[in-house]
Length: 259
Image (cartoon, rainbow, N blue to C red; front, side, top):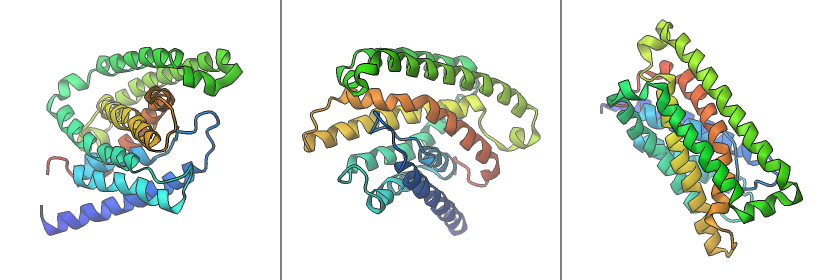
């Protein structure tokens, strides 16, 4: 890599890191009611974008410090959890390799049934974890009988809207010279990268991070309690990732993932 190329990537990553820090700080202030471990922000989208565009090293750095710096600037909920920074580090690394996989087998991942199958499994898993988790039942309290089906229904509706939007926007992009010439990925491919990255790091990884931290401080909460809470954010987070990354990716073609 040339010196100029390295400087470009450092500058680009620094700008994205500043956005990630601000996003984390802002959304830390948003109360989540009975879901204290669930957070929505643009930070995962930013980290995934950096990983795809600038590579796993820069993605990991942006991921770690997007969590680390806000944790010390605005401490919410007690001590700093280093396991969360590990999850964000993984989020900065994984999309790069998924992008390379998708690029290599593009003809397969451009097909919508891959994404439909993933979300089908997601709905099944969400229903199982939602109705087989006593700690989550306690979190909902006496309103559990109507809150759980409401959340599941809204999640399903979100996914249906997501599929419809992806279908029509992908058709539109196919006829748009800007995207056809400069973007390396279809919307289905971006959604796949985002879904797998978010599921493995922000759902499974963060659940492990909270569980491990809880063992140290004797929270007496099961892994599945955290998992059931965090999995609720997978569908809307993937939707945000899709639009954020697909909008910016064509304008960042100078940073190639294969360099």
